[in-house]
Image (cartoon, rainbow, N blue to C red; front, side, top):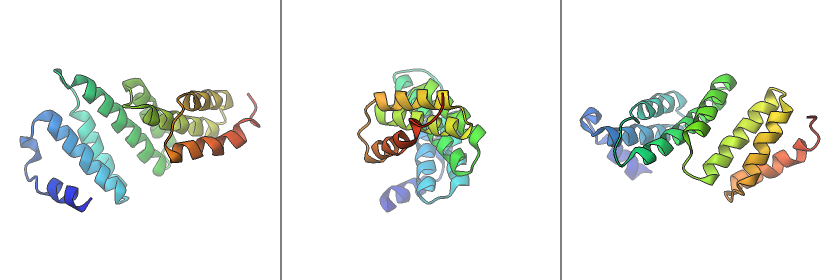
Length: 158
């Protein structure tokens, strides 16, 4: 981590980077800030990275997936800050934009399930839970989250 941070900090003029590389630069800075629990900086940098993700060419698919992943991270950040409305908006946008893999998609559906449970929209919560489970994620944290939610979801009305 220290090595990566050292390299990122060595970039003095990020505006001189090509647009796709600059987008990745800000996304990485945002990820580093999240690790340090600096949510304000993380949100600012991830938003900068997402804003730069437009344009055409061979990298368009990768940029779309990265945009989805960035929006998912912004949704998670919003949840950390207890901004549930913002979190829902970002996570829905992430799902629409597309996510890079099943694990990220399952995480997004589980977050939406959690948000719907908070809003007492149990039918929607169960729907998002089924979608997450159907993806058969293998990441231990996500599998554990599914097991935790499974205990409660059967008792919910709807």
